[in-house]
Length: 244
Image (cartoon, rainbow, N blue to C red; front, side):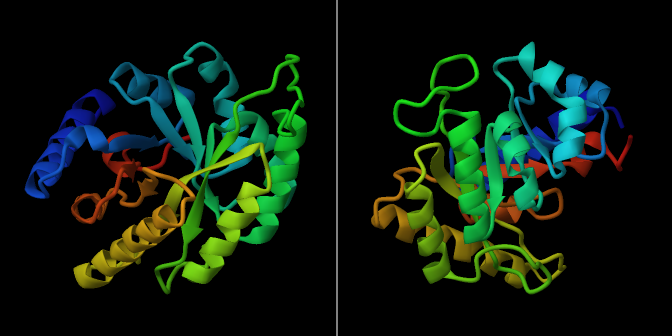
């Protein structure tokens, strides 16, 4: 199925899930997860209304997105895969948001990289001679036993949030999680509820006011919407099986 045919079907399902949950569909961002798909597919998704794209590997994103983004200022690129510390500088220079901030060491590496790439220190300057906007980041919460990434609980998450606050080049925008890859909807729902509750606690403590809650993929996004997701990460349902 072509992207122009697939997207209306996805949007219809998003609208139905939002209506069922009593939510405004405009509160939910539809991300196109373009990893393993070429620039032509990205361009087709953009032409059909996708403005937020997700990639899981820095090098693949570097190969595909610089020219694309330079000519489409309304598009944004998010890092959703595990990020190695030695890739922090490249990530800071390319992505608009890193969703997979899963450990303190990565916060520190990304914070230092942003001081160089984005003029993150007060009074600093970017490559163009002006201070760039902070890099948006999401803290990843570990909520699934079959996932190895993410902060292990609320206390660790709070520690990560406090570390982010020490770096002017980073801006904490919300939270992300990966639900278990399971047909057990109770386990999937419990994962999403954990993230929602964590978002409430960090909001109460003043880390943000209206957090991005990135949860839900092709196989479980309707449950995620019911549990409060504000950003769903959809790959296969839009782009089909992996390309490149």
